[in-house]
Length: 102
Image (cartoon, rainbow, N blue to C red; front, side, top):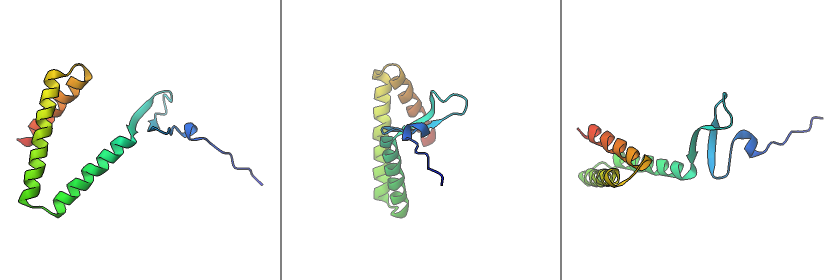
């Protein structure tokens, strides 16, 4: 009878705070990392999107448009006042929102 070999989560690249997808070439650095917080945010975004599609009305349009505008304004302010990576991320987000709104 064969004894099953127990493997730890670390051997698979799974850690308590994040999930890692390792590359085959270099196992020392994760190729892509996302946290549980990011997954919850993505699920919330998808849930609101589906709710807006199912119950489409002028109120949903106004709400989503207002939230998008406020996030855009916050991004522009953070791009002006931020430094380094924060500034670059917010400039990119503001450009993407502006280009998609036209």
